[in-house]
Each structure stands twice: as C-alpha cells, then as structure tokens.
Length: 115
Image (cartoon, rainbow, N blue to C red; front, side, top):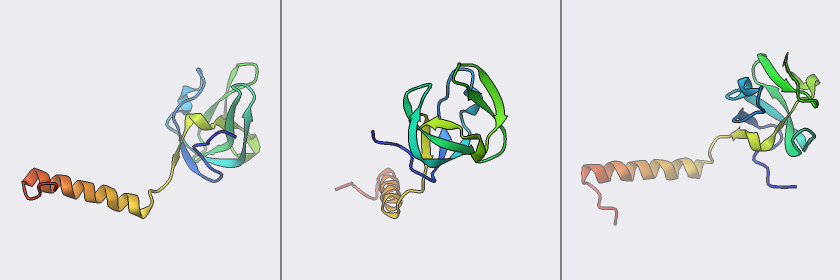
C-alpha cells in the first residue's frame, strides 16, 4: 500500500473533496482504519466521522450529491490524499522551532552573528 498521510484514529482536516461536495473542505474528521480503496476515485481512503454533526456532502457511486449527517454507521470513506492529519509535533521539533525563532530574534537585535 502506498504511503498514507493519515493513520487509524487520527483527526484530520479535509483539504479537498469532489466537485459538488466542497462544503466539506475545512471540516475536521476522525479517521478509522483499515484504509481501503474508494471505488469512485480508485484512491485509498479512510472511514470518517466529522468531529461535529453538521450536514456533509456525500458523492454517491452514480455521481449524484446528497447531504446527510455522517456518523460511524454511515460508512462514509474519504480519500487519504485529500486529508491533512492533525497531530501534535514531537517535543524535539517544538524545541528546534523555538531555537530557530530565538536565533532569528537575536540576529535582528544584532546580539548574535549566527556563527
């Protein structure tokens, strides 16, 4: 299976959806594995449940668009490529970013030459 952006249990931001279902973009979903092929797009996807029970644009196999409130029982899948996982950064990445910001601030003040 190709490299997947999300993993089972992740929260993810919807960054793309099929034409007619763009109202889903920007919504946060929880993903549930295992990942599998989404028939209508032939892309790997996850079973999803939006974080909040709001109307969700659903593209049917025949291409028609419906709107429903989605939960786990709905068995709606969303393409992994169209999701951005929302995970906390590991501590070392946080410290590295903080150090870069501190160094930049010192450079701007002329207190650090960067050598």
